Image (cartoon, rainbow, N blue to C red):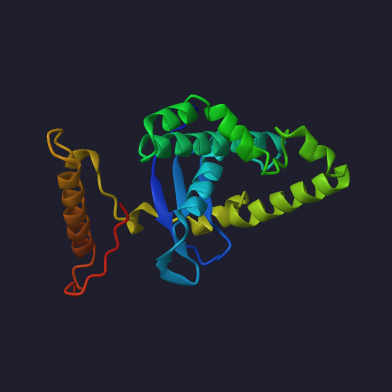
Length: 220
């Protein structure tokens, strides 16, 4: 976010009727909506990597709208950055010997390079020239077209369709997390305070409902 100077006005969950739709970006970051739950069962969450992939996709729309070569070039850069961050973070918190983790952390570019050789960068320049040489131009064009078609289904660019699926602010339970942090509380205390505030907001929004068996799922 800081590296690319991306700004988001409101990040929220959506559960659209269109089962293929995974994310929406309104006015280049004014509001980003993500599908977090399975389209077939609202009690089941999608895989974290799938949600993060959608988030990176929508963030790319902050910079560029159409699903074209420029779009996929930046999206692939974001995926590489995210992978590099994941590797760096996991190594810092791993139980490997210090000399091993330090050696890995000094060479994040090498790690990313090994990763990208196993992923076809369609719609943009591939970092593995040998991989592209093994694919015909027609095959590359076909796969790029399939990727654009898939993204047009999971992330609509049609303004009329887009605004049909955007949840209105009045439908959202918006909690100002910043106000929950006094600056001198432990993270666990802040998390507990957030959960209590969330439940309080839900009860406030639905005063006529019974909340004795309120089913609230928190993902830490």
